[in-house]
Structure formats: C-alpha cells, structure tokens
Image (cartoon, rainbow, N blue to C red):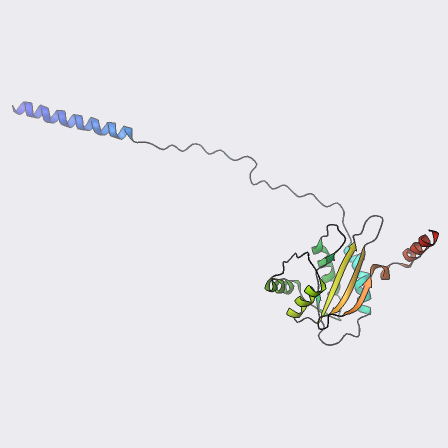
Length: 207
C-alpha cells in the first residue's frame, strides 16, 4: 500500500512538472524586427549659390555722403535709426546685406550716433514688428525711432535693382522723429557721375 501511494505521489509530481514546462512554452516572446536605416532622411541640400553679387557700398556711399554734407546743421538728439529698406523694385532684395552696408558706412561718420542693430531688434520685438518685416513705411520707422529715443531716421527706398546694363534707382531721406518731416532727400540721379548725366541728356535730345 505504501508503495502504491509513493507511486501515485511521484506520478503527480512528474505530471505537475510537465504541466509547468508546457505553460512556460506557451508564453509569448516578443521579437523586435531589425531596424533598417531610413533612406534620404535628414539630408539637407545645399542652397544654390547666388551668382550675381552687388557692390552695395559703391552704390550707397555717394548717397550717404550727400546726406551727411547736407545735414551738418542738425541739432538736439543726434541718435540716428537706420530704417529697414523699403523695396519697391519688385525684385528679390538681400535686405540684410544692404542693412549691413548702411551701418558700416554710417559708423564711419561723426555727425550722428547710430543706433546699434541689436537694440533695433529688441525694440522691434517689443512693438511686435517682425525682424524681417517687408511692410516698411516712414510712420512705422518713426514710431520705432521714438521707442528707442532716436532723434532722426535714415529712410532708404529702392525703386529699381542694379543690373548689368543699368544702375540702381533709389532714394535716401533724413527724417525728423519729432515732426515726421523729411529734412533731406537724395536720389541716385543726384549723385550720378557727370558722364552718365550727359549721356542721358544726349539720348533724350536725340529722341
């Protein structure tokens, strides 16, 4: 009888072990599929290079000099804000290049104290004006100058971009922040070389 009970107990233990192994084998094992590297993701194409380069210094320098020669009598607050460029040419304009050139030219004179570019950016942010604002106007720039406590604004408008066969057409104005008055105004025609002026006049007389 004891032997029979021992046989039964051993059989039950063996059956239990087999059952545990079967349960263990039925558990799902997650296998992650191999990760394949993506194709052409994160590849940044190099932007096309602009072949045409414009010497803005030679274009703007005569107008700046003319404005300064005509503004020697300015008084009071001589802090000057160089405004964004008003582009009426209908062409793409690298405004940052023009802005850098104007600041570089004006930093070489002693008549005005030029507001630095970082202060202009901060003042724009305070007024909610985009850093690369395209809707440039005299009233907006005068408002910006008042916020910065600048007495004058140098306002430049581009009417025609320079080309291989023709010069740029633009104007430069000195504005009073207090009154909004245009104190001085210079255009490209005012600073053209005498030869070019004579050529234009002769062409006009031939027509």
